[in-house]
Length: 524
Image 1 (cartoon, rainbow, N blue to C red):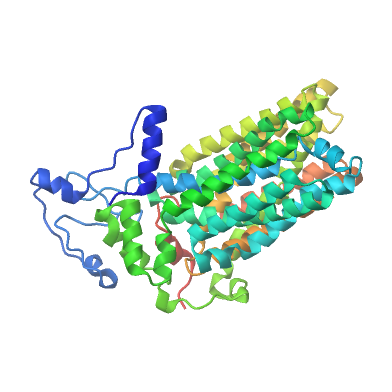
Image 2: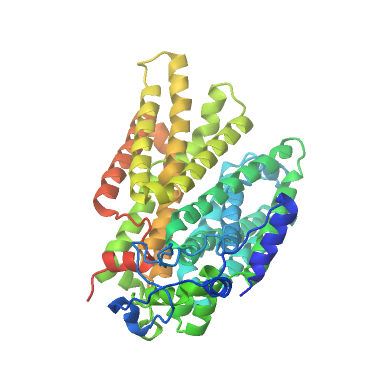
């Protein structure tokens, strides 16, 4: 079966980079060209949940829940190439998320001058925080939207308010218009990340799911850096901020358009009882040789359509699902209580004190963040999620310790300055290695299929609420407590997160979503 989206991406890669992505030959095609001597082996797993494997080659389950192919007759892991175009389209939503977080960084001053609220810290704060309010709303409803309409339609619905909101912000001549536009954009920002985490985990083969899960964090970093780079001319051109908002409508339109050619999540289709479509999408993603084994994997969990009733909100807060929802919410809470957004907020001041222009400082932070995310992508399926999380939070605690020392009078002024800058860069780097990319991926893996979308919405809402309060209270707490005590508090949360992860988080590397679900959720 030819995948239209894959053909489009292949054509672009061939034209721009001079190479093509070649699909692996199907087993049926292989057997047409050469004679393969194989033996059929019968086991109880061949009849799992009523699925009879009638292929003429050996089957066996490896630890990933997928099938393996070797010279002895086993089928290989599904190709990593087939789902890649669909995942790249999904990560556009993460790019937009990062872009809109950073779009007012360099443009806020010129926006305030042109719209007539210059000097009003309340109005400037509203331009930033209104977006967060919209994100909270979008996040709260993301589970119900993605479960009700499907992952593809949820992405398109995410793109719509981003296009409308960015257009309103780009054309407004009043503060009210800007706030309304930012609110619309925020709803799309809140809807996108949880759906992206779900989609990527559900369409990725188990052996590369960690790598692909890191794409969302990398896309967010690229979005932030793009916003900072495009916003540079705003310092000299007071109307350039309108161009910055207009630019964001292009990737949003691409997301809505390309999702028409992308695959729907097989997990969502199977849960809705659309078995034939599930098999078609599995064929597009993994190839015909893996359809029956993937269907057998889907049938292991409690996500069959005849068993799925409406998930009630209170069901997520007690009973058999409470443990995984609590773990997910706690991870996002620790992520924000570590002080990452406070560090981002305070980075410009630190760089200015070191004699580094704010533009160069922000770009430096962006490069470190992006570099760490790329390293995390490489290590995710090698070292595993749990080890990266533990190392990340521990490294962040050490970085906060450096900040505490820098805020004291123990060292000389120049040494304190180097410690402050070095501690901040180390904090961002270690954050990007684990605490940044892992929670979203891990949640999409450990949450049971039946409640995955709605539970993800609840956990992401915790993220937005704590993010809001940290941003709101940081400067007041800094003034009341001083940097030493405040950074000590952040470092303590990082150490608490390290202990929490070691005790409560299981390793999900290389395991199918169904295996993870059966390991975590007790049977009634």
